[in-house]
Every structure is written in structure tokens, then in C-alpha cells.
Length: 77
Figure 1: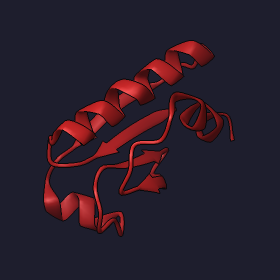
Figure 2: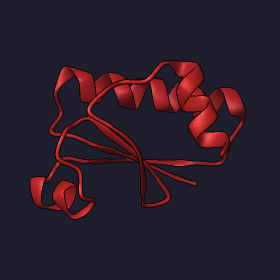
Figure 3: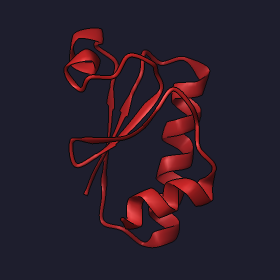
Figure 4: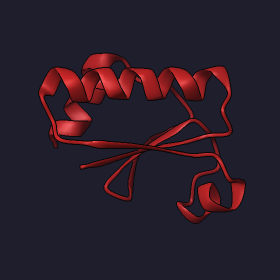
């Protein structure tokens, strides 16, 4: 599973990366965490608000930092 954090490195982007990684570890997932900070690449996902979370190339949430439980649900789906 590839977890991608789309954002320019702001505090919210870093928090999303932290929470997503914690969720993946709690679920015992085999994952790779990638941070995408280049604006052109972020826009290629169709994201207009950061931070955003993509799983295997599909955007799951944008413009906010969901709770640990919410991210766990997104990763299980």
C-alpha cells in the first residue's frame, strides 16, 4: 500500500503524515509513505486544498487532518 501525503510541508501536512503513519502501524499494514510537496504534482491529483491524503494514487481526503480513527477507516477500505 502506498500512502501519499500531498502538501507543501506546512504544520498540518506534517501532522497528517504523522497520523497516517500511526494509523498504518496500528493496523499492521505493509505500507510506503511518500510526501509530495511539488505544487504541479499535487495539482495532478486534482487537489486544490492541502493537506491531502492519497492511498495507492487515489485521493481520500483533502483540506483537513482527519482523526486517527477516521484515517484507519480510510486505510481499511
